[in-house]
Figure 1 (cartoon, rainbow, N blue to C red):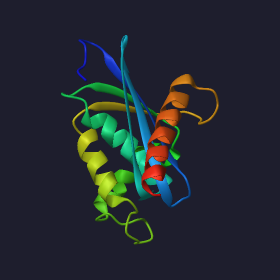
Figure 2 (cartoon, rainbow, N blue to C red):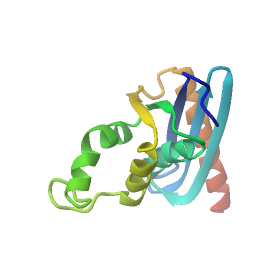
Figure 3 (cartoon, rainbow, N blue to C red):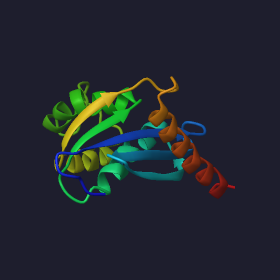
Length: 153
C-alpha cells in the first residue's frame, strides 16, 4: 500500500486469543482515502498481547515507503508500550524497571524498527464499544484465530 500525496494511512488493529495462551489471531484494516486493505492471520499457540503487537507489525510491513500513519488500537499494552515504555526498555537493555526481561521482546524490537521508518500517531480506542473500524479489525482477528483454532485440531 502506498501513500497518496499529503495522505495519512489510518491503521486499525486488533488481536484475539481463544485461551490466553492458546490459538490466536490478529487483524488490521488499512485505509487511505477510498482505498482499504484487510489483513489477518493467526498462530496456534500465542497470547493476546502477542497478537495485538503482530497486528500492528503486519500492517506496517505492507507500507511500501515512509508514510504518515495513524495507528488505532484498543490495546493499552501496545499504545503505552510504544509511547511510554519502549525508550526505557531499550535504555535498560530490554529489561523492565524491576530488572526482568521484557515480555515479547522480539515483537517489540520488530515494531520499533518498523515504526522508525514512518511518522506515526498512536491512538487508543475503546474496544467493543461500537467503533466501526475497530469492530472490523476485531472480526479480522477472530477470523485469524478461527483459522488457528482449526489448525490446532
